Amino acid sequence: MSGAGAAAGGLAAGEATIARLLSQASSLLAGRAIAAPGLDARLLLAHALGCDQASLIARPGAGVGAAARDAFSALVARRAAREPVSRILGRREFFGREFMLAASVLDPRPDSETAVEVALAILERLPGRPLRICDLGTGSGALLVTLLAECPRATGLGIDIDPAAVVVARANARWLGVAARAGFCVADWAGPVAGTFDLVIANPPYIGRAALAALEPEVRDHDPRRALDGGPDGLDGHRAVVAAGRRIADPAGGWLVVEIGADQAGAVARLMSAAGFAPAPPPAGVSHDLAGRARVVAGFRAGARAGQK
Image (cartoon, rainbow, N blue to C red; front, top):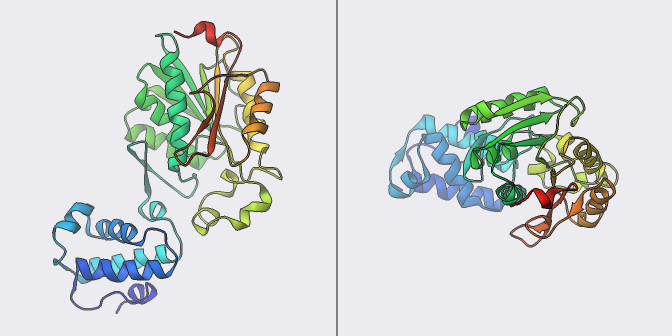
């Protein structure tokens, strides 16, 4: 057995079938407290074989050669060590599109799709003209690229303090066909940005510093710390975003859409109100994710209602 296979806990040596490898890997991952061991095993074996999950299901008795088996063993070992599948594969599905990942960017979660849904509902209510979007702390570009793909009349600017993250965001914009309408720059929030935007969106770091150590290993050990650490009270990123939004959101109708963590809705709403953003009824105001948790706070500058349809 190869070293990779041994590290994975002893996946099949010699002749192996798809069904046998999946069963062994699922058992191993379940023993390591992995939430969805069967799904993860299928994703990893499909990657090792260069096929999709449907192909695995269709031919469970098919043999797997030594090279693919060893590659799969190495992938399973990484997942058993609590590296996320998305990091192992280098990609993540978000809002129905596949985004490339790298160590420099936050792994976008389904929770953040709530921010996209809120932003799209707002954009649809704005007059039928070209729109400008700014994504603060863009990371992989998931928020901005998704909004541009869903709203063809919009252009956008993504900003991140990490040059490596900006490289990833640009690549995703090209990959998903919106590069002609997307610009990116390296900056600390919106420091050097001139002009104003119809919508400013952000998913700032919002974990309180003392809580970082208790995060799941998939998050704590693999997401960039700067994308998680919200300072002592978890609100440092929100303070920066609200201050930047006040400067660059159109004073005659600009919107600010911000993702939040648990129990932060009231505090973030107060920050936005103090900066001149008025709350609005759903889909703005405070919006909840599919689990029923407050996930997004949104507000508008004076004149926004007059500018809507």
